Length: 320
Image (cartoon, rainbow, N blue to C red; front, side, top):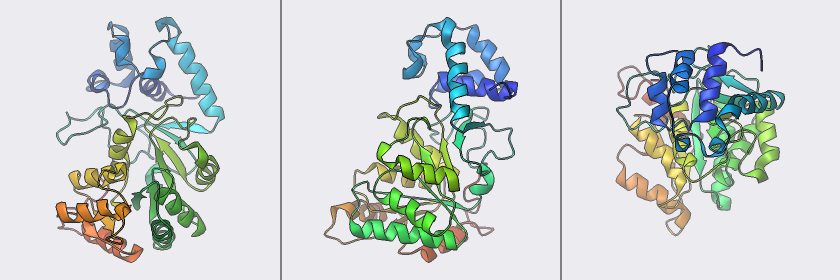
């Protein structure tokens, strides 16, 4: 990818070397441009354990060549690199790596760039956006509600963002597509390692109509730790989060709790009191006073509009 400017290529290289959750990466970049950070890196005797799992065993002298080869493969697959200096960089994530030290539990202090597949400009697409997520093993009720919400939010002019998982997330995507919308999927791994693989056809449709986004470079496989950091990223990228079905221990609740931490609308759809897949929603509504009960896209839009009114303590919505 010779057309990449120096800052973009260096940020991509550092992103390829490190996890975006690695605080050492933030220490390298803070107060310096990307090229200076790379010079700092070259002068340090880093332990291999500080690199991403996928690159730890690559000999140091082959790192650059391997990166260049994989970056070229990404370019041919339609994957591009978006950096904070771009007009399309979403303001919800600001420039986490170059900003002040985290004070609110940032889980991605080393986010240097976003890896994107799809032609839509990221910032404009996320200007009015909301996360819709929930149980992977969704019931027929949950899938129906999620699809309806996705469809109706699209009609109301909102972008639906999901993690792309089975169940609720997939149903929300299909509802969005049926409404002629622009879905966005934020994935906890490289855009060449789509997860779940069973949704690859659906992801292709998303890339054609909307965007696939990741904080991880190509080659990064989804693992046990990346979904938690991804919950932070998706909560930051959007103006609010809606959960449709979740057990009390469901990972689908992570973006909702993160949205509350960030002061953004957190909404849950109730379900039958006899359903374990709605128990997590009911529990969050009882335990988190900031959470709101919603039953339709109209309820969701009302919550989002209220949060963005001047004078409201959540008025900055999905922006920092």
